[in-house]
Image 1 (cartoon, rainbow, N blue to C red):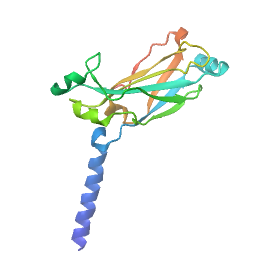
Image 2 (image 1 turned 60 degrees about the vertical axis):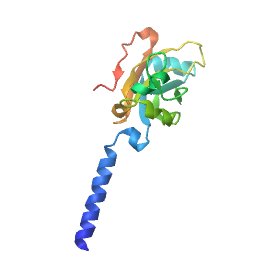
Image 3 (image 1 turned 30 degrees about the horizontal axis):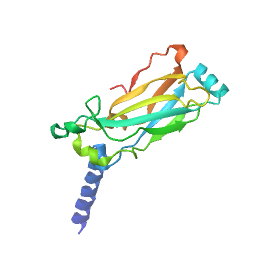
Image 4 (image 1 turned 90 degrees about the vertical axis):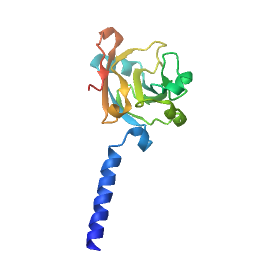
Length: 168
């Protein structure tokens, strides 16, 4: 019996480790975390205008041969009808993207990994124009899920050189 328990414990431990290394689609977990930071000028202007920040996430992927009839205008499979939007205070902070707007039936149309595109903009409460230039995400969801990705924002007039994140 002692040997059986040891073997069972080993099997459970290996199963837990393997589950952690499975792709996001196998785990049915499409969420990830983003942290928004601001330049001093952007923080001051957003505070003065009582402006917020919106994080937009859209999921997509490359089509299987038999799914080409479902591609969007850029030849990819959109996994949702609209972007997931999360509001963050104008001071910056943490955004948790859930992946709840994904149409899971469309996952069968993909050849390859689920990808995600994330953009950040001002909430447009004080102006109809976006005030921010921000880093962005565009790539495999599995890369983004490795940990919170920090996206930095500055005012557009600061001419901030935005970066693709995370860096591989």
